[in-house]
Image (tube, rainbow, N blue to C red; front, side, top):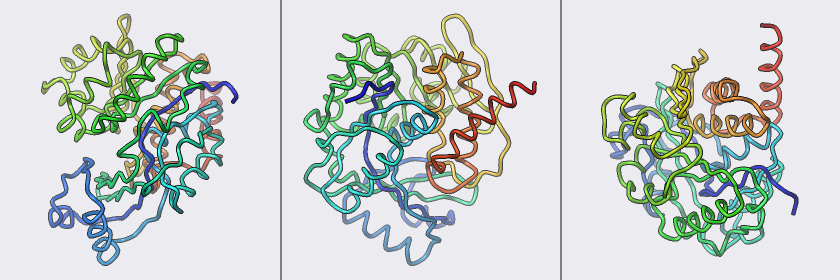
Length: 336
């Protein structure tokens, strides 16, 4: 197997997207802007109601870390994705999508059970609310992960959604140890306010004694640090990571290290769907770092890519669009 730059671990989910009204969220007791776990029966009931009453926008291979890995690979990086899917039609679709994005996977990823699904509900204000049936990925463990590519990687990327699974956390701890033994940098995303609220102890375990790069949005940052002030949240998070990146939506992103702190402005677009925006941001940011760019340039590329994701339905761009946007970013810098 060829050497990879990024080794990512996360849940494998097929997204079903729907444009919905606010009343629908209330009717189904869904907390806007968060992810909620559900069993198979509850997922089927929600899907049936969505099909009958709301606007279907399409299906896409998803999963937070997978979206990040796709962005990283489409920009030119070499990546491996460790996950678990069922030996069913959705599992085949999922792995085929990764293959088309030139992302390496392992035969170990194919397992018993049903491939997970995520109902992605897009409100009129573009905010995404999710209900997830994890399926077989709920039992992701080290048995489904080929750790060999990690020993030569530059980055290990950990999805915060794994904080709710005992077996997945154990696999992540194994990956963290291997990364440290081979001088591989570690990045982690808090993923979702719901993970901070309901799986805080699991996130603490994933963070361990700290990481090299931490991604979160403004709400997650303040929830995790239990403060109402972003500056105070940033100070606390810096004790957990050498570099902290807090995304601020349309306001851009705040980046901090021990030596510097700065904010990069956002990019104005017509937002229709925020699903996958943070994932794309992380993928572009890490790619830029592996390509030798500084934090400022990495944030600028990440904002460009993620803002384009927000301007369309679905968690990923067409594969060719990532490279086109990177070329545009480079041309804009030359013009300046």
